[in-house]
Image 1 (cartoon, helix red, strand yellow):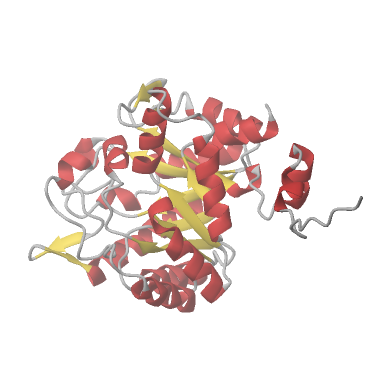
Image 2 (cartoon, one colour):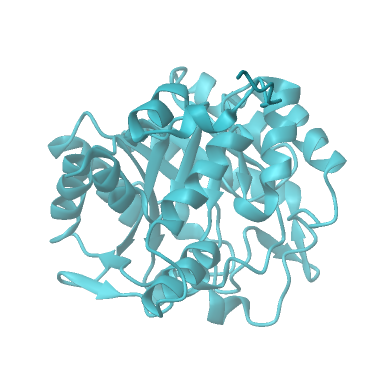
Length: 332
């Protein structure tokens, strides 16, 4: 006897019945092409140094940086972001070392390009690694002076472009710096140098381990960057910042931090349809790594966190786990 049962016409579990089916219908994909590995380079060290607040992340000297880049390339990651750890004796109130064409960053860019020409190098542009006060600009009358800072950021960008950086990434949050740098690059015939703007960089408490890594935390002390980094309460302001930077010549825009600001990533991507990157910053990375080490979270939580970036609309992700996750994705 036929019994009429009312079953659901749509059973979404049918599309979850095997790993191959899950892969077939996945809405988003995370690949090695989406990942960017930040790398810390340090003067006056042989080999490497551990960073206590960032598990598994090291500072690299000139003698070890090429081995690390080779390791990153073998993992499948094609892009690195360089950050300098400058000798304290070279820091001053104006960040003068930033414009030295033979400084740590420029020498490192040249060295890497000579040995790995195919690697895309993102070079950070900001003064905080070079100033004795830890701020991203020049201080005048107890205030970070926007326009005085622009001149040195222009010069810093030019020496990095001359050294061979593929992408110049201003992270300082000075108003008008994208226009100033774009003009300098055009005038000096670096027309093809890409500008990646940290367009929506928030005054976040998630940056602590990074500041330890580049030795700027002690210089900054109790000072705040709230006069130039964005308030965590604002989202409309992020759209304003991004619109300004696009109009001034940015090719790519960045949101920083990452997971706490995925709504901003989604908002920017849906509004402007421009390549949009996000930065899983040091605090995010270190919290997850510590929880994994303690056994509180499964190791796969790092991959899950990065998938959330893609789902929000990020085209690429700066993450300290880039090499590790790329190896996992590619089963290397």
